[in-house]
Amino acid sequence: MKKKVATLILNRNLPEVTDRLYEQIRKNDDLLTDIFVIEAGSDKDKLSKYTSWHANWDEAKANGLRFNRGMNYGLSQLYKEGKFDFYDAFLLLTNDTEFEDKDNIRILTDVLNEHQKIGILSPCSKRWGEINLLNQYATKYFWFIHNNAYLMRKEFIYSICNLDELNHMNFLFDGSNFRGFGSEHEIIAKAYANDWCAAITKRVISSENESHLLKNAAIIKTDDYQENLKLYIKEGKSWMKKKFGFNSHWSMQQYAKMFYDKFFEYNPELSIYKI
Image (cartoon, rainbow, N blue to C red; front, side):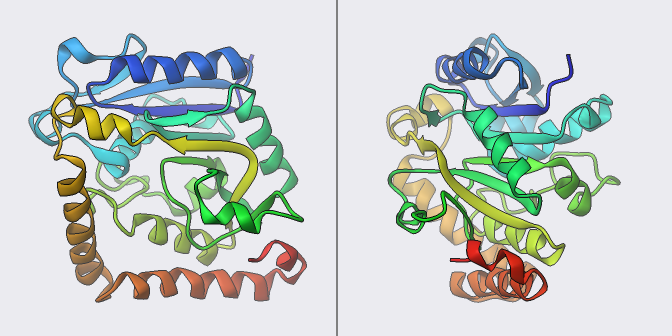
């Protein structure tokens, strides 16, 4: 039976956390998804029992892959192996993503089917201010979405990916932005610039369990929470400056919003989903 969704989970040295997420998804959505686990430079004794690919080159083992490089690696591996076109959409998850115990992927794919212009779909978090905007409509279109859980339509990925760069650096995300500050603006701007939209739905609720980083930074072999936050912003602002000439995160936001506003000029019938 053909599965509609490929779920990619990114792990680095937290196999129990990853395996729990894998097993919950398998229990609730087995008929809809195949699940692939990306090991981002994990130690040999800390691999998920469901590992699909292990990034075990020296740089990956030393620094990990983070979201951008990790998802590039997994998606490009699917393409190289001839599996990419098996699926209609790809659910990209960090292993610290937590869902309610229900058929979340089935609900998310229902939303995609109802909104044919959605290229990027994210579940909402109860901790996000965005949930307060999802009243009359459970799904609306945004110009910013935090990037720990994205469902991406295959056609959208094809419209912006680099098929001549099947690697962990440039297949979909810009891997030169290692920690990813500002990357969500870039990918969302690319969506709206290509007549796709990015949406958040409260029909599925998820959250990011930051306690894993707070408690296990040494095991993950990463900087502690506060140091990581400083570097996340510092390195991301440097990337924005070098790539776009932007001197502030505000400029990056306005770049994405410009394409967002243009999308509704070309698709006025969808203005009911504009925030």
